[in-house]
Image (tube, rainbow, N blue to C red; front, side):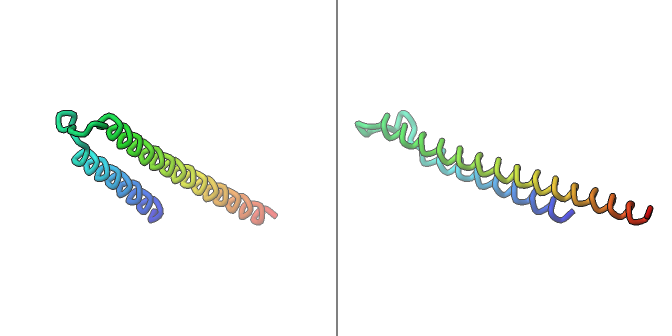
Length: 93
């Protein structure tokens, strides 16, 4: 099914994007030993909060996509079974 392949490709790309963002943050995040600013704790907390917010948004987006996928499949199968039932009823008349 082409739709399933497209959805699988989309989720794989989304996962790769999250991974690259995490690697980028990890490389730019200053280490504990490298803190030379007086407000290092505040900077660390702000960076961590930002990462948490982006990750939360990403997870919410994935949940929405999953719900949409399930709802679409549900409608597809309901339509399929209704069509089969209607075809069978017409044949029996």
